[in-house]
Image (tube, rainbow, N blue to C red; front, side):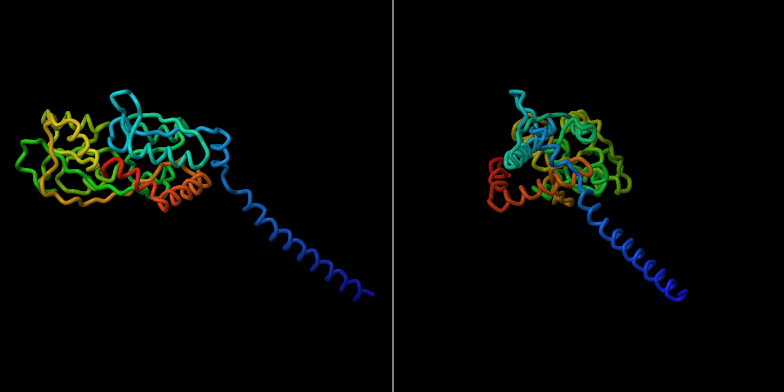
Amino acid sequence: MKKWMTALAFVVSVMLLLSACSQSGSSTPASSSTSGDDSLQKLKDKGTVVIGGTTTGPPFSFLTSKNENDGLMYDIAKRVVEEMGLKSKTEGMLYANIIPALEAGKIDMISCGCVITEEKKQVMNFTDVVYKISEGFVVKSDNTTIKTLEDLKGKKVAASAGGLYYNNLKKMEGVEVVTYKSTQDMVTELENGRIDAFFQDKPIILYLIKQNPQLKIKLVEGYQSQWIGEVGLGLPKGADSLTQEVNKVIKKLQENGEIDSIIRKWDL
C-alpha cells in the first residue's frame, strides 16, 4: 500500500511539473505577440503626419520666397505619407532644432538632408536609404591657398554639429572645428573672414551658388569628395512598427521609379 501511494505521488508530481512547463512555454509566444509598439496605429489614428525639415537646406528642404516649405526630401516624405493613406503637414525649422522637435513629439518625421550616423541612431529611428550625398568643400571665392584637406591644418573650419562632416573633421589633427546653426551663418562667417572654410552637402552648395551668384564663396576646384553620406527619413526612437511600414512604402516607390523621378525633378 505504501509503495502504491509513493508511486502515485511520484506520478502526480511529474504531471504537475509537466503542466507547469507547458504553461510556461505557452506564455512566451503570447507575451511576444503583444510586445510590438503601437506607433503605426497611433499615427493612423492621428491621421496627419507632421513632417519636419530645415528652412535653409536647399534643394533638400528650405523655405521659399513665398514662405512655403519645399524641397526634394519634402517631396519624398509627402509621397510616402500619401501612399500610406494619410495627410501631411510640413514644419520648417533650423537644423539644430529638428531632432529635439522629433524627440519632443512636435513633429512625426524628419525629412531633410539628415545623414544617417550611429550617434543619431541613439536618439531616433532611420528608414532605409532614400538618397546618397557627399560633402562640398567651401572657401572664399578669392582663396588660392586651400586646395586639400591637408591645407586645413591650423585653420578654423565649420560644419553642422553632430553631422558626418563634423565627425570626420574632428578626427583631423590641427584643425579647429566650429559649428553654426545654419548654412547661411557659415556663408556669412566665411565671407567675413571669421572662418577659413566650411563643409556642407555638395548639392546644397551648388544650389545656393546657382541661386545667389553674388555670394563670395566657391567649391574647392578639383577636390574629390571623401565622405559619402546616406540619407533616410527620421522617425521617433522605438517606433519600429511605423519604421517597417514606411520602409515598405519606400521600397515600392523605389521599385516603380517614383523616387528617382523626384530626384530628377531637382536636377540631382
